[in-house]
Length: 511
Image (cartoon, rainbow, N blue to C red; front, side, top):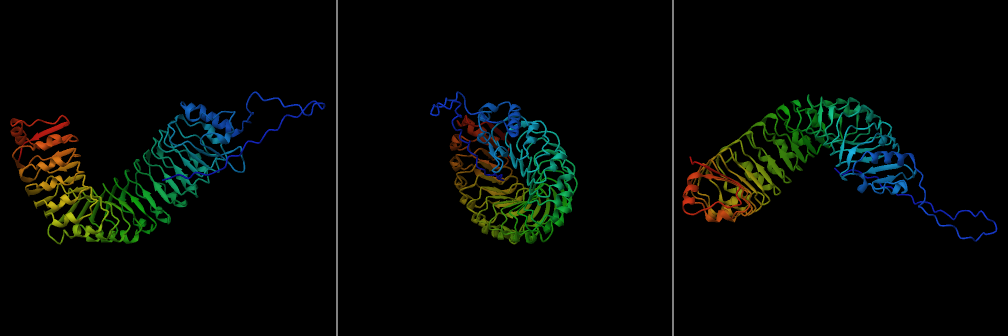
C-alpha cells in the first residue's frame, strides 16, 4: 500500500546584504568576502536529527547533506512545515539500507506529520514518540525492531496510519489502541505478537486491518463488525479459533478478506457472496471449515482470488463459480469435494467464462471419472492445472496441449491410462510435469524434449516402455527427474547418458 507523502515547499535562504559600513567616510567601500559559508542556526529539530544520525552506523553516504552548514529543509528526506519553516513536517528515509537504532530524539520532532523509515535495518526498541501529537503516518515496517508496542504511542491522537509490519515485535496489541480514533490503517503483520485482537478497534475509523503471521489467539471480536468502512481484513497465519464470525457479513465494504491458516471451524454463511459482493480476495485456506461451498460466492462478481484449500469442504463444486468472470486464482485443493458424473463435472464447463483464470488447483479431493474433453476450452492464460491425488480415470484429453501458457501440470496419483501423445510438447512454458503413479503405457513421448524450460519431470510408477528419448538429454533446465528404473537401465545400455545439467535423478521401480 503506497504511503502518503506530504508535499511541502522548502523555503529559500534569505539573501544576506553587504555588512554595514563602519566608516562613514568610505560609503562605497567594497564589502569583504566571507571566508566560510553562511552560518545556519541550529534549531531544535536540527539537533534532534543530528542525534538520530549519530545513532546510524552507515549514515555518511545517504545522509551526507545532514550537516549544520546546510539548511535543514535541504537535508535528504526532510520536508519542512510551510508555516514553521524551521520545523520538520516529513521525514522519509525509506529503503536506504540504514543500520542502527532509533534515537529517542525523534520524539522531539513535535511538528512531524509523517515518519517513514521502512525497509531499512534498524534494530532495538521503539522510541517514545508520545509528544508527536501532530503525527498522522508512522511507517517503520520491514526492519528488525524488537520489544513491545508502547502504550505511549497512543498519545499520538492524530495518527491515521500505523505500519509496523515485518519486524520482531512481541507482546500484545495494546487495548488502548482504541484511543486512536482517527486510525484508518493498522498494519502489524509478520511480527511475534501474542494475545487477542483488541475489541477496542471498533472505536477507530479503520479501513484496513493487516495482522497476518503473528501468534494471535482467541476468536475474531464481533466488534469489528461495526467498522462499516473496513475494506481490508487480513488475519491469516495466526492461531485464531471459533466459527466464521457472522458479524463480518455486515461489512459490505470488504474487498479483501484473508483468514487463512488459523484454527477456524464450522460452515460458511450461505449468503457470504451476496452480502460481501465487493470482495476481490477471499482467502480461507488451512482451517477446519466444512460443509458445502456456498452457491452465493458466485454473487461476488469482482472476485479474483478464491482460496478455500486445505479445509474439509464436501459436496460438489458449484457451477455458480462460472459467474466470476474476473477470477484469476481458484484453489480448492485438499478438501473432500466430489465429481463423478457429467452433471457433477459441469462446474468445469462453467469455468470457461473465467477468461482470466490463471490457477486451477483441484488436487487432493475425491474427483473421479474421466477428465472432460472441454477442459481445453478453459482460459488460454491458464498457468497451473493441478488435478493430482484424486481418483481420475480414462485418457488424458489432448486438448490440454492448447494451454500455451501452462507452467505446471499435475496429474500424479490417479488411475489415468493410455499413452501420452505428442501434444505434451506443445505447452512450451511448462516447468513442472507430474505424471507419476498412474497407469500410463507406451513410450515416453520424444516431444517432451521441446519443453526447454522444464525443470522437474515425474514419470515413475507407470507402465511406460521403450527407452528414454534422446531429445530429453538436451533439457538444460531439468534438475529433478523421477522416472522408471527399468527404462533408465535399458537406455543406459544403449548409450544414453545423463545430461550434465541434471542435478537430481531418481530411479523408481514400476508398478
